[in-house]
Amino acid sequence: MLAAVKGAKRLIPMLILVSLLAAAHGCAGGGGPTATTQVGALLESQSTRSREVSEMNAKLFSSVSTAPEFNDYIISEGDLLEITIYEAEDLKTSTRVSARGFVTLPLIGSVELKGLSTREAEQKIEDLYRANYIHDPHANLFVKEQYGGKITVLGAVKTPGTYDYLTRRKLMDVLALAGGLTPEAGKMVHLRRAAMEQPERPETYLVDMDQLIKEGHAELNLEVQKGDVVFVPNAGVVYVDGAVRKPGSYPIKQSMSVREAIVQAGGFGEIASEDHVKLIRDTGAEKREVVELSLADKTADDHDKLVVQDGDIIFVESNLTEKLIYGLRFNALFGLVGLGYQPPYTPQTR
Image (cartoon, one colour):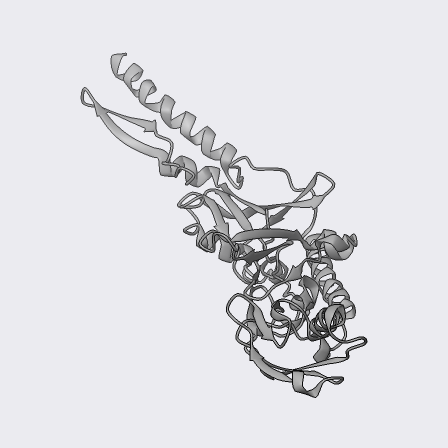
């Protein structure tokens, strides 16, 4: 009788285990959101984003100022200028712009010309001579040596680099000069400028390109100055959670696929269900779409065509069968062998 009781006690955990395995067979479920859309719909949305970037670039190029003229050249420190007053040949002079931006002219002395276009400088010189010396002067300013300056464009543009700053340019002009935005470009553009009083603490301006180009907020089309750095960041971060080795947020690399994002998070965990990966995407108007992917299927090309976007969430579900088996442990207690269950270790979010 006692032996039968002991045998029954040993059998109960086994029956429970068999029941759990039967319930879990063929079922994946680490929780996770319910799918709301198909892969094709997100691919269409992805294509829409690519078209939006193309349209933004078209507007960039169409709004660019016409080719700069010589009279638009911005005078900078170090430039060597030749200034002629047609009504008084003896007032002709060659002078270099000082580090503070001034030149010295006959009769009128020190004049600040730095930051003016050649056209504006001629007008200023004519006004000064008209005020005290010549009835109707006509000035001509020729830049014999251009010292000029540079602007730098970095990030998600087609031709990043350093460009000569010879004429006044606005932000859209500069982005067009750098070939326009790439499809990976984020919405916010950073314009960094050294402060006059504290150069070690530069000022940074953030410009929302959707507001500037799509919505027509012309006041955001800032004038770019010599020495400015324009940076177009890639589109944000992707969040990877669930049965991966290192859940957390990761910067989006160029054309990063869902699979590559999971690799960034350390890859699939021991209990991951590669057949049940959820991609959650904000589609605007406070609405999110969820698509289920099967990354175990190497022939599902559509699934690998999806590239992650800023703010995407990837959730890798757990396989209940593997989770249960992984958590099983044997223990010995007073000479009796029993079965127990210990949940597998779940990595902490970074």
